[in-house]
Length: 302
Image (cartoon, rainbow, N blue to C red; front, top):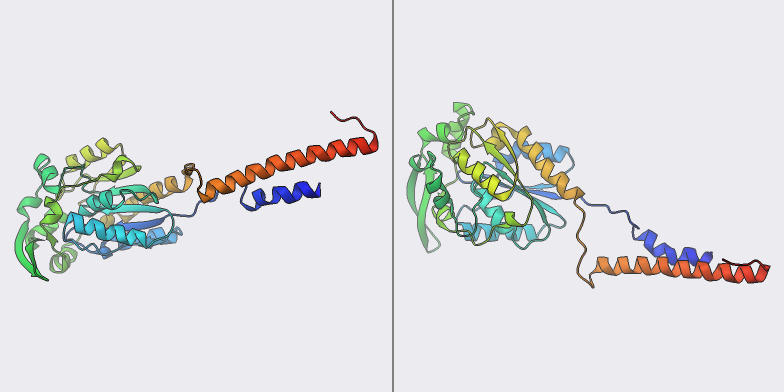
């Protein structure tokens, strides 16, 4: 009996059949003309629910370089991840999550969700919006590199970008907006992580920056869990509760998802094999003990 307890102990210490999954870290990626503070209302609500949250600064220089940057941020975070992208940020999480097995869910908030070979420009050509007539083009030079930045016209920011925010707020947004390089919308996606990772999508029905029909098309194509709300393009600012609820759905799904069996030779497989071996050994020892006791006490064994 003592031998049985000793052999079985490693399986119990390793958790037996009980699996505990850590809460995922939520990574919030903002879009064009904005900064990470646009997530403030969502961050506060997620942190009250016990989640770790990171809202990195999106460089807004181009799909390839920006997604590489976001992927490097993900590499610095331990444990499971849920990525949330607003607007252009949706294209970034679709690329940055590719090949990262720790990303369990993708959440798109009034976002771009390109397939391989698509760009923000090609999607907008199929689903026109008012953004094309609401921007100013400004040449820039930086570190020997030159290009073109897009700014929202101050008088167009509120009706096109944030119609359900007060005018006093949108005046400040117009002054403090962060421009986006045209390469953010012209570069074609090389990967589409939403084909392999479960996704959630919030359609902003009153959005005029991205056509709501484009958002519905993207969500349906990806098989996303979809909600629609009466919001302008900046739903995370105007409806932080609804956005938080959707992120929590994705996070809860990530927490409850049964982990896949790892490849042969992984640490988990080794622990599982050890536990099963321990149980088998314990059974054999217990059986042998019963035989010996039966012979000693003159009792027949079955």
